[in-house]
Length: 326
Ligand SMILES: O=P(O)(O)OC[C@H]1O[C@](O)(COP(=O)(O)O)[C@@H](O)[C@@H]1O
Ligand SMILES: [Mg+2]
Ligand SMILES: [Mg+2]
Image: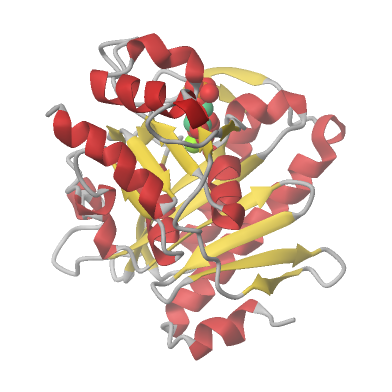
């Protein structure tokens, strides 16, 4: 099995970017270790703090954030970082060529139940004309990403990574200490009969999503003519990993449960990196109205509706939105 550096070298990835990716993975290995130690490492439970988005921070949110922030800024190739757990961007080397935005711990609500968690990251090119502390340098569409990935802390620790040459899956070999290539070409089947959505929000969705789901749930007897199965891990990283492994559609659509927060998932460090991975594996990703990676962000913590996965199913869902303009 191949180690990560030769694979990236073969893809012609810039050596600075390779060393940055390896640094991020070093932090993730440390997070994986703390996660696996659980209560023994005293990392479970909540803090008294809230992040800028008004969400209670788990101890592991903070630990993962600190580990990543410190080690990434030490690389010298990063101009600034932006994190779910940081109100504003954190400047690094003014001459750094890259920007890193990340969700240090995705699926926080799974922390205390020994269930799936992950780290999601996205790497953007830095603009030499902007100051290191200028947040506007991050406001680039997902199509500008030079690399994106996640590390899933599950029964095994896995990495999904793309630099725009397909999506590859690696598994952490705990005896050797590095990630080894275990799936060279992750491919999402075009058709699926499996969906992931938080059904408890059903009555708050927009009409297009209500209609799409109603038809889907009618199964064989309905307009779709087939039965669907449902899964919900409550960690995007876990749900998207399943989609990369065997297809499916994952949705966190807009809802009016809390009018001040119509969308849940974050564009820059959840939706964009996952969309890049999914598109590179042959899938599709949309808000229902537009391709996610085409959105030009207006805020580093911007939220967005997400519909991603098997191409035909995403297109079917989008077709319901086309009938009912936003
Ligand atoms: O609590 P819900 O509605 O099931 O939402 C679950 C979603 O929220 C998230 O956990 C948000 O991520 P964080 O844990 O990083 O805040 C997603 O990973 C997941 O898909
Ligand atoms: Mg998250
Ligand atoms: Mg998080």
